[in-house]
Length: 71
Image (tube, rainbow, N blue to C red; front, side, top):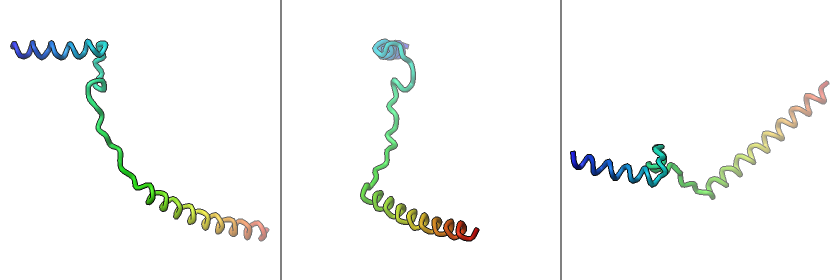
C-alpha cells in the first residue's frame, strides 16, 4: 500500500505541473509514422506522369477536334 501511495504522489505531481491537464496526448508521445521518400525517384515518377498526361491531352484534343469538325 505504501508503494501505491508513493506512485500516486508522483503522478499527481506530474498532473499538477501540467496544469491539471489529464488528456492522454499530454503524457504519451505519438508514434512517428513518417516514411522516408527518395525525392529523385519521386520527381522522375512525376515527370513520367506529366508526359503521359500531355500525350493523353493531345489525343483527347484530336478526338474533340474531329467531333467538332464532323458536325
